[in-house]
Image (cartoon, rainbow, N blue to C red; front, side):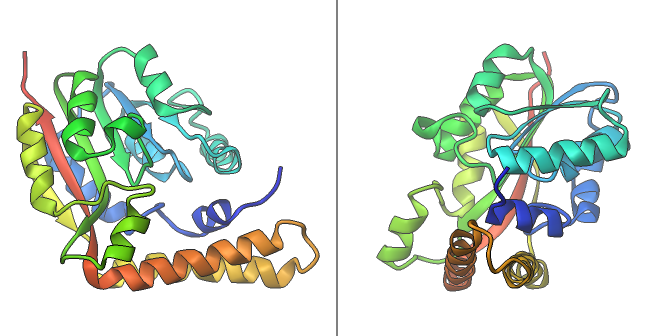
Length: 250
């Protein structure tokens, strides 16, 4: 299987976003996810959060990842942890898996691209669709970039190719429209954001230097340049946040 930038980056970082495991555990714990309950992670990345849900919150986890190289990394981490009976990884588009699963006690969508399909990218639509797949009293954790200031038009156009980036207050309004109670919001600090960018970039540059003749090298180098430039340019206008929401009990 060919290597790609995201596989290299996700192998190096603890969590596949501007987030740490300690922060995630502390953020989620007060909501008391249902022990033994069903959880879905959309965009498994390196499987760090799926494994955390199984280990620390005693949940039965379905995880979905569409990138084949990243999925191979995630599966290797699940196997190494010996948690194949607690974490199941599917290699497919998340809307397909959602339709086949029973209602979930927890849905995790952190930095996922089109978690419920390209036509439902905005939080208004995404939260409503995800809430439909939650059991009564179930939890939704949404994490993504958000606008902290009015972006330049070129940045807004590039962002719109893969993200419905909005001001953070739009997430709160979207939760209410979907019948979800907002329990907590976490905003990543500058140190976490910078560590996220630098760790990914460092991993890619090290691989590029060590593999000058690999056919993937030009594409990985170009992607590393693009990702670092984009995230650095976008930083004055964006932040990364988590929003924890609960569906009303039956």
